[in-house]
Length: 634
Image 1 (cartoon, rainbow, N blue to C red):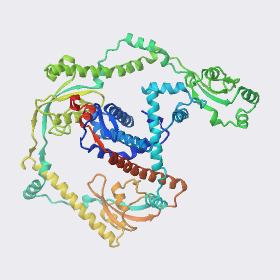
Image 2: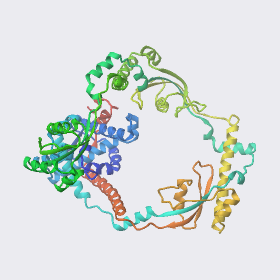
Image 3: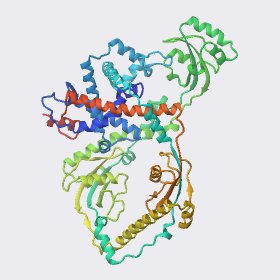
Image 4: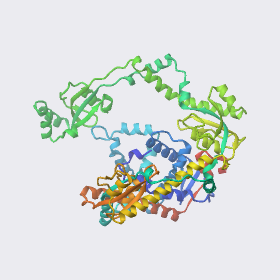
């Protein structure tokens, strides 16, 4: 929760996130040798314990962070695939290891030091640049923590910074390495290429029965009916739940009346604010500025840059100091206020732009408000349906009975494979989550009621496996047509590779690209200078990488983007990288330094783990993840 409070990409937390994936998997592999620890303890490094609650919080932080980046809420299954469980534990282990080392070294931060640190944080400064306790307390309420806990966490972070900065601060890549990387990334090549008309060059003979039988015998796995399952599915989707919410006109009107002001578009003003140490200085400046013909020029003479005094386009609520807000929203456009003695300093205020507000009536916002209320209530509706269905399942009712009684969509799916398709290759379910439902079907067992599967939209699916049909090897007679098509395609690709190799050999022997392109019906094209990371139009990325492995004049072939043909290419020119500019060298040096810091930090954390000893209570870990029983810890 403190990530937003940090001051850049060089703090200890971002360093650990850069380097700890290696440690994460090492952590995950630690055996459960947990004995004699306090109840609720999930892991321990040295004498530092990591509680179940701490892990749950770290796990939720990782989930929230990834969900924001991906633009949607992650499911438990997705989080597991993305390694959220490992990353959360690795993050806690890294912090605990550094904390233990810091205590061993006697590092710390005084109360006065941490107070000054928080007061100087830009996140807690008002528009005048002064520390605002009001903003600080508001932030604590927003993240749901106490001042004491925030201070303690922030203190630990600063001590960790002392250690990691001393370890990583001096890391710098050698100039030779920076120069090599620059030459590698900025070298360009001009490439000639064409794709022959293989329909004219390649003729595949019709196979006889013996060749088809031989191909079938060698590629039997291509001709197998996948395992299929018959399942019953009960679906509770967000869209369905939202559509069934009953919101009366009175409910929507009541919500409008409760929060009418929030729908209005407030007046905005572009405000300039000039701060002074006292009223006398402000009075003197007012006398000069009020009579000046050119305000900008006069303000510059007093030492104020326009960029320093412009607060931007703000609403009244954006101005924390009520006296300053009152002055700013009482002024006429382009007028200068008299000195205002605010809470933090004395200021002069000027308004350069006024954007009128707008009052929005119920009719203006009722559609927007109805949708907002539905979104607020749908999560509760989904959870309520989930609980009701689970109660009905516990009472022994079938999914079909539950669907009928609760008006929830029930589906009988005669056959579905692991990819969500029927035996004919068509979608088995006409829903977005068909693949996830298929995965649940193949994770289940006939006669066993599995837990609900969480859907990507926050809904749920219950999947009961009714029957299973094992995969079946299709006999040759049944798939003879498929075998023929597969054989012809394989032979065509083999022959294309042979023809392409012959053309490359002729190029190497001295023939020209122009002559070969004309002979084979291809269109010769020449790229503009391209770097390794920027494939030019018309040339597949793999072909570009092959071109950079060749000398000037070297030739080769590469698969086309669809894999059905091969492009013939030749390196026409190799253009060395130009000398690096100061900005380029600085950027590359910073990138290399970050990679080196990441490796060094991973080694540091791994060394601390080996030094102090580390163990995980796997039973407690399962409880924290919701996959174990609380009694497992006993």
